[in-house]
Length: 307
Image (tube, rainbow, N blue to C red):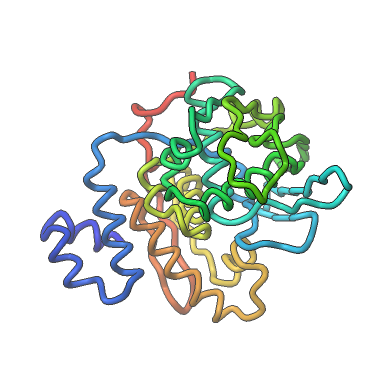
């Protein structure tokens, strides 16, 4: 992907599209890379570092408990229940990730568990780079409902000791009335509080990201996960690290039965994630896997501080 950034700087976006954009994903990569290189605002987003190793499911799952094992970090997400004791479901997909990234970013930025959602649903959607419309509204409402009710447990292993953090994402439902079939935008909370345990863990383990990067890959949940993972891994490396396709499948695609299909499907998302991380040095070998090289963080230290 470094080739895209070099060509953009040398030839500009139109010529780079003409040379490299032979598919829709290629065009998306060129446009995303151009947006990163021309971003002057340098806005910062925040994710809990634990999500670099263990993330939410990409698709709706029938199970009421989601388990994601990322080696030193393991995540359990348990579905909440409605008033009839029926499981609501585990949050999933890109919309759930965008909601959580927004809440985490605002909490760290304002150093408060209480997050102002804005005066309207439309303003909130715009802040998350989501289109305004009935379908999007229902998607956000459903994922907000799942996020509001679920329980989560982080298991972190360090020095032979396992640390356990129990809690939830939020203490208050984002929508105060459980009526997912309505489109009443008046059913809205101005302020939502993060769960105290989750907030403290977020403050202790924040991972800074480029907000423009998340916006460019906002519809691709796997690309979001890969970008967060690379942002976490690359800047702490001291030497190159080769990761086989089989190892990547264990972390990012355990649901795949065959390695060849996983490799086919992850490559477009990996290229998109790299297009919004120009500092990343990652070599891709379609036969053996990828090699990570020590690389700068996507956010320079001078631009970010939680103190």
